[in-house]
Image (cartoon, rainbow, N blue to C red):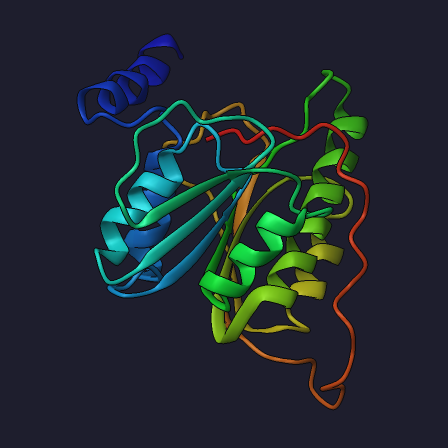
Length: 218
């Protein structure tokens, strides 16, 4: 286990990424090709910034990445990344202005995870709440045809969340990157082809659930 963990940790350091989780997004991107040149990306729970850095590389100078987290990243980003401190669910005027300036978005990313306490069902429930909140933001901020990548802990709400995604996206697949630790219960939904619910074009976005204290984990 230690060798597995150290491999990705050391690789991230060698390649100047702040965290090993960048390889999860790289594996997802290799299969899905969501981050194209010129795309606008919203990264939720972005600290310490690995996903934002990789998205920045993929979308290039013509693209843009808006990264939001409750904590400062302490990472030097390229010019096409705007990193902001704040709550995605209760955005202040500065974040609302950034949404208007940089959005709507081609891709919304969420690698958020709750502060786990080691209690299986509590951790799963908190993860589900964060995923619901991220979906609410994605529905409000994505362009038609856009994509959404979100981490969730496997649990009793897994299938219900997947069903909810299918209301808004043409295709939904499950990804378990090799760079995830074998003991981890995390998986990722990769949803593409964003659209209004069929027959319900005027439906509001789903109401976000309270996320609690949820720092970024990438």
